[in-house]
Amino acid sequence: MSDQKWMRFGAITVCIAGAVAAIYLIGRFLIGVFLPFLVALPVAGVARAGARKLAPRVRIGERALSVVLVLLILGGVGGIVYLFCGRVLVELQQLVQQLLADSQNAEGMLARALGALRRLGERFSIEGGFLEAFVGEPEAFFAQQLRSFLSGLAERLPAGVAALLGALPRVLLFLTVTVLACFYFALDYPRVTTTVGRLLPAQLRERLPRWRQAAVEAAGRYLRAYFLLFLLTAAELWLGFLLLRVKYGFLLSLAVALLDLLPVLGVGTVLVPWGILSLLMGDVHLGAGLFLLYGIISVVRQVAEPHLVGKSIGLSPVMMLIAFYAGLRLFGVPGLFIGPGLMLLFKSLWQGGAQHAS
Image (cartoon, rainbow, N blue to C red; front, side, top):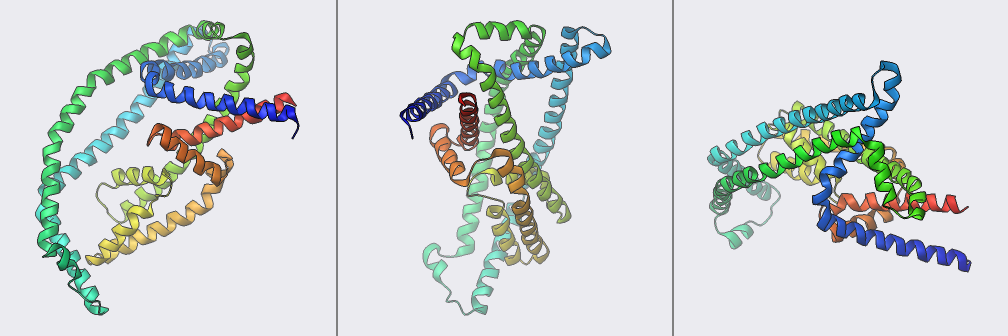
């Protein structure tokens, strides 16, 4: 490799390290302050782009049409969020009520599971008594642990509700500022982008359109890949739970699908232990159905994931692992999603810079 290429490699590496440090500092200290405007700017950009195309056809001013499109975008997103959160809250409320009301039923299920384990040990001539040596009487021990968990849950519920109510003013303020910023940005979008551009150095201003295009393409591929994967897994789980007549299937499908997006973990983390426990308690229909559902999801995942994720993101498994680990160390749990996105963005910028240099 020539000296010029080494210098270019070192410069790009330093720029990437500086960008990571800047993103970390911005995300740690400033993102909350400017988040309403960061959300409003792309919404206004989409509305303005749509108004620019539709204005000659409908014979309405571009600014007025952009306001109408902002209303449609916010109304559509708000409606989807309302329906989604409403369904989740209903199932979550029913789940909490059942957990608090059916402690005796849960203890009975636990006793049946322990009895099934004992019968299984006797059938295969496994020496018993090892559990009693550690916890004494298993039924009494686990029943006590279950009662402690449920009572602790009941004690924490009022504090959780109070914290949620205390956060409502901040949420309402955030939504109000975001909505107002959407309209202001949509009305004066060219002026806003021009003003922001003038604040940047001339050299950076020349490169910004190319970087913005690379960033938009990278973010689009990344979000599309993970959204389609999440949607496919959640739909499979919800359909399977409906056929198996599992309560709170919508809420469970969302939770397991989100868990499936995390590295190492997957749907098997939930479905396999759940299936084993169901078989031990004598519910063969549910246990076999959960194992069948896990098998179907695994097969579909193996077939669909290379097309949805591999081709969309374009990162090797090693690069994905590095991105997951670095994101987790820098940003915590959200870094599991931020890390691969930044890695994809840097890859796009690198390729774009190489093409520009050639």
